[in-house]
Image (cartoon, rainbow, N blue to C red):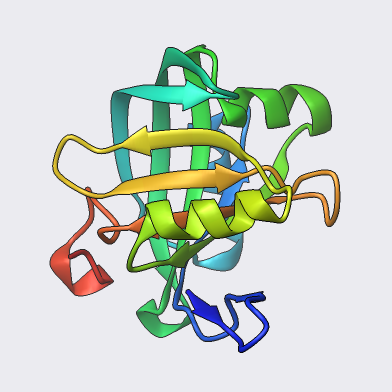
Length: 165
């Protein structure tokens, strides 16, 4: 993540990896985007995630579908929570379906979290991946209506040509 000489965080030069949408019915939403807009094909996955949500350890089961947009430059991820507590469930309950976050690639997640926390922007949810890397959803939803996700270690669970590290 870039910072200018005054220490301001600047994501404008970081690679955008993912636009995420929270959905109530994953299969219905995948079918809608494929049949009406030709978006797809989607890779559908399900996984149990251990995370830290608002500072407390928790676990949730998610099912999500991912495809590429913009000539392969950005992933579109549709997320459906099956069970447990997560930032995704909170967003769906509070706002309903819709865009929930934009994900930026960062080289040092922990360092970027420290910089943002000094500005009063807290981590809403943090996940350390078993295969390496980690990601955090920064609590920016009250302004702009969506979260900023920071990801270290590249996208997992997708083909290597999608930018997985």
